[in-house]
Image (cartoon, rainbow, N blue to C red; front, side):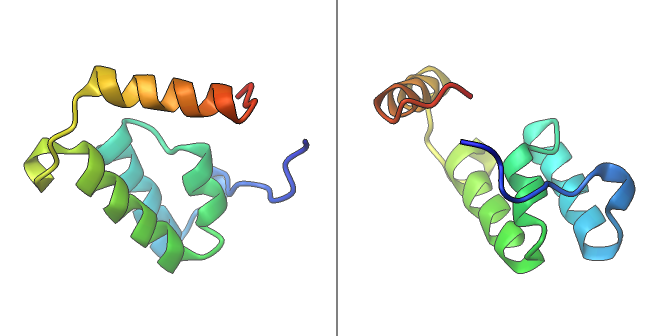
Length: 84
């Protein structure tokens, strides 16, 4: 399946979108492709980054084993036939 929405490139990011990208870089170490796509709706992208912070970051109250989380990602991708 081909991508239908083009992600916003770093050079195109201004204002709220640029702030979202900076937050993604601090949280994930990069601007994830999903964040680039969700940035077409900055409110949705903000919600998503807040969710990721709550799930992944121990200092945000999460209790998440990295190995277990990665196993869940791989299993979910395999079940759904995701090759990404």
